[in-house]
Each structure stands twice: as structure tokens, then as C-alpha cells.
Length: 257
Image (tube, rainbow, N blue to C red; front, side, top):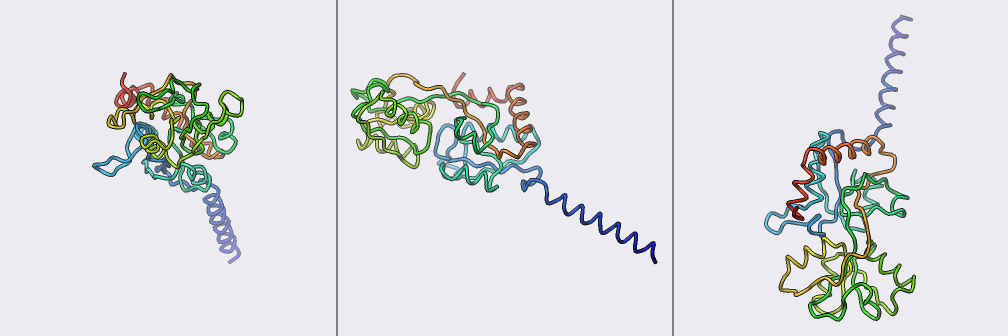
């Protein structure tokens, strides 16, 4: 009897340890990666008009990375301002959304190795007297709220490089472009590839770029700071798709060689 009690006691300890260990791991389902993005930022992430699916450079890249590290990828469309909270509350495991790596953002999230460089550029109507970002004094400028385009405009005003600028934030970049088309704003400041994609895809809007890129930025995938194993896997997957030519193939599809 005493021996049986000892065996039962040992079994109970094993069960308790197993339950405790199970509770210590990540909430992420093993083998599945839930990815958050704001799908209104072509060509990086957007909803295909014909299929209704979320597509774009970022989407193909994260799916390729998922395949490289043996993870199924699920994409969720989330508003830009809600992406950080969705990540930190574990609604998603990774955010990929043309997100620039900044010191401020790095205080709350962990970024992957950079996967692309970009910068801000000005979009205007054809025939505008605005020829570069230096001509934005006295103008109304549309930006997507809480993006590096928004921050770049605020910095130039704060530093005295521009005067009497009205910065008008919008929920999405397409909303800012719509205001430019209707004359509500004089210019839009946004990421160079996004501006050029919009101009190419909407020739009837008769928009053009003013000047050249005036910032240097690098995109990264955001993860929770304590998700160490995932950090490692994502960077390994990124390195793998770059080494085997998959990255170049996706890049050329959306941006040309």
C-alpha cells in the first residue's frame, strides 16, 4: 500500500510539472504564424479587387519566410494604429506592414533584420508649383497618421525648415491621396514605392512626384520583445529566402529588377 501511495505521489508530481511547463510557453500555436498587416498600402499589402484576398510584396515575403521555417501563415487585416496593441496582446505573432524601424517603436517591439529600404517623397498634382519637399511652406499636406511621413513633416516644421504648414493626418494613405485628387490638400507625403505605385495605378488622377526621396528608412517585421525563439526563426527565414533567390523573385515582381 505504501509503495502504491509513493507511485501515485510521483505520478501527481509529474502531472503538475507537465501542466506548469505547458503554461510557460508562448501562446502562439506551434507551426502557425498569425500575421497582422494594414492592407491599404499597395504594393506592400492590399486587397485584390478580384479575389478579395490580401496580397502584395510583404504578404508574399512573409509567406515565403513561413515556408522556409515550416510555419503556416495566416494574414489578418488590422488598422495601422491598432497593429502594435494587436501584437502585444498576442492577437498576432508578427506584424509586417511596411513598418519603418525607429528607435521609438523599438522601445515596445522587437524588429527583425531589415528587409527593405525606402524613404519619403512628395506627391502633387501635375503642374503644381511644389517641386520638392522644400516647397511645402504655406501648404496643406496630407499624411497617414502616425507614419514616418507624418513624423518627417512634424520634424521639418519643428526644426524651422518649413513654415505655416498645415499637416492633415488621415487614417490611410489612399484617403490622403483622395484628398489630393479633390484639392483638399496641396501635397501628400508618403513612402516612395507607395507613391509611385499609386501614380502608376491611377493615371486619371494626374499626379506626379515632386523632387526626390528626402529620408532614408528601413523596414522590419515587428515581434514581441520576449518571443526570442520566433525572433531567431524569422531572421533565419529571411536570410534563407534572400540566399536562395526567392526574395529577388518577389522583389522583381513588384518593383522590377
